[in-house]
Image (tube, rainbow, N blue to C red):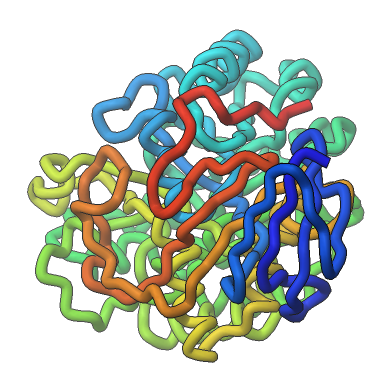
Length: 427
């Protein structure tokens, strides 16, 4: 046993005082009393599984003025996230094995956290799916235009799902129907215009198309950032192989809120009505949705301060997601059981990685939380290169210590490792 950790452990849905033994980066023992040569006693502080963010855009390569894999993973670590999964709409996009290998090589030198990579399925690379699947963690299909140019045609959907299904890897969807978006497109001056341009019916049509194309196929399908009550209704009675995620911004923000700088909240899919927000939050809270995902999509302040119509869509969130919901859990607005399921257990299951639980044999990834240490979110204290947050002054509880594979990556709110500590968790 290399080390032991003592605290108030989250085990099987409840907290109990105990110790975790660590050997070779894995949890080797869980007992009331354990002592290794290196013993960390956290008293009555909470020891929870570290989070897994299944959906980030770290902008590397090609857009590193907004973020790079070091700053993105650093932000993730400070937010209690031990493993991130990066999306493929970079420059160049992750659509072939060379670009995928280049990412793996570069990120192994940069990342603070462990990481996985999704490859894009385009209209031109269906023949490459099998080869890509040997390295990537999952695939991404964009059914509506958003950042990047990876739009996929509905007519190819069934064949793409069949090809991906043979690999055993999950396929993630950006579910907005392109024809619907084109039909509603117009010049935008504010968030209400953006909502009219990307109405909920575009999400509804796209989800219906995915469900129709996947009918009879028992492959892993994940629908990202569901944002509407119509989307939730369609997915409430989904089959077991279909999962979906909800973001903090869609479940905590609504179009009725007073936004002083509207362009900073422009995102795809858009922030919707308070009715949608409440339904999404309750879906997270009551066990309907599968995961909480940040869809961390940073842009520089200069880019977000442009004329609304020219401002790119996307907001940051990887560092603030877990801390904001830890605060809600402390206030008993949200249960710890649901939070751990959404941020730890289910993402690990969907992506087939040995993380997300305080159980023997799993990676020794966990966070230490002092519930008394509430704070207000301040952009100047965050670590994303973009330098701003949509949650300025919101209450949160950040982890004071973060372990990844048994090593202290954050200790007393300070970074302990150099870039390159993180490992690729792919095939």
